[in-house]
Amino acid sequence: MNRIGRFLIGSSLLMVLIAMITPSAESAPPPSVSPTAALLVTGLQGATGSTVGPDGALYVTEGAAGRISRVDPQTGELTTFASGLPKAIPAVGIGGAIDVAFIGKTAYVLVTLVDHDVGGSDIDGIYRVDGPDSFTIVADIGDFNINNPPTIPFPFFIPTGVQYALQTFRGGFLVTDGHLNRVLRVTLDGEGQRCSVEHQQIPAERHPVAQRDDEEIECRHGEISVLIAFDDIVPTGLAVSGNTIYMAEAGPVPHLAQNGKVVAFGPKSTTATEVASGAPLLVDVEFGRGRSLYALSQGPGVPGAPPGSPAQPNSGALVKVNGDGTLTIITDHLNLPTSLEFIGTTAYVVTLTGEVWKIEGVSEPPYGVSH
Image (tube, rainbow, N blue to C red; front, side):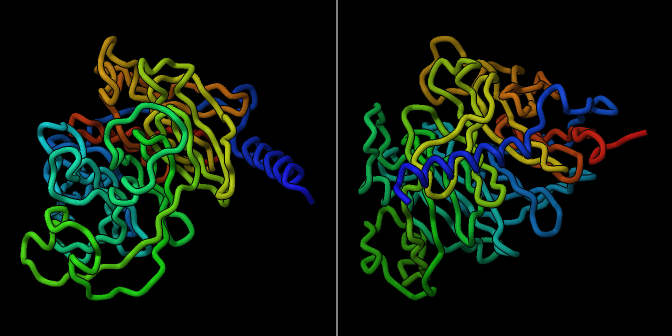
C-alpha cells in the first residue's frame, strides 16, 4: 500500500477514535449536580505541573523552591516528596521543576529554563528521583535542542527551548516545548552506568551534580527524538489514550479563543487533527472518569504583553471537550491555572499563584454523582 493510502486510513481511524470518546454537546447528558470548587492548598512556590502518584495522592512541582510536594487529595495536607532540584531563575520568572510523572513507583521531573542560555548553570531535561534529595539526569533536553533546532521557520530566542509538559508513553516520555513548538519523545533504553562529566561531553558549568561534589555521577542516557513539529502554535498539556496523543495548544500571542485548541495525533503522525477549539490559552488536557475529555484554559492574554506572559487574572476555566468540536465551560473564574488532574469524578487544578483547587462533581452519569 502506498504512503498516501496508509495516511488516509490512519487519519480515518484517528477520527473514529476521537468521535468515540468525545460525545456531541447534544448527546452528552447534563451534569446531575453543578460542580463545586473549593480551595484545597495555598502557599505553593512557583506551582505549575502535577500528576497523580501510585499512592493516589496529588504531586505538584514547585519550580521556585526546587521541590515536589505531595498533596493529600482529601485534606490538602502538604508533605515534601523531593527537594534540591534546580530552582527557577528569578530574572526569568518561571522554570525549574515544571512537571512530574511516575513510571511505576519511580518519579521523574521535567526541569526547564535553568540552562546556560538563560543565565543558569544547571541542565534542562528529565531528572529521575532517586531519593528525597538525590536525582539522576536521564535526558539532557537542552543539549538536544541546541544541536537540533527547529526546521519549521518561526522566531525563537531560547535555543534550549521552554519545556512544559511531561507525559508517560510506552515506557518513556513525551515532552512538549512551547517555545520550539514541538513534541519530543524520550526513551529510557540502556543500563545505568558510572560516568564523568567529560564522558558525557557536557561543560562542567552545566552540570549541577558535578558542581556540588566534583565526583563521578550516575547517568542513564535517554534517547531523544522529535516526535512531531508544528508552526507557532505553542503546545502545552498532554494526555494519552491508547495510541492516540491529545495535546492542548495555547496559540500564539494574543492567545485568541479560536487558537486555543485540543488536537490529536499518533506516534507516527506528521500532522495533528483538531478535536475542539474555542477557549483562550489552553494549558492542559486530561481525561476524566468515563473517558470524557477536559481541557484547562488560562484565559485571555494581557493586551500588549510579550510572548510567554500569563493570562489575565481570574479569567481561566475548566472546559469539557464535545464531539462537535466545541468546548463547554464547567468552572470559570480560575486564577492563572496551569495544570489539571482527575481523581475519580473530582478535578484538581493547580494555579500559578500557588493554589490547588478541588472541583467535585465534574463527571456526569453514569460516571459521576447521580440522585
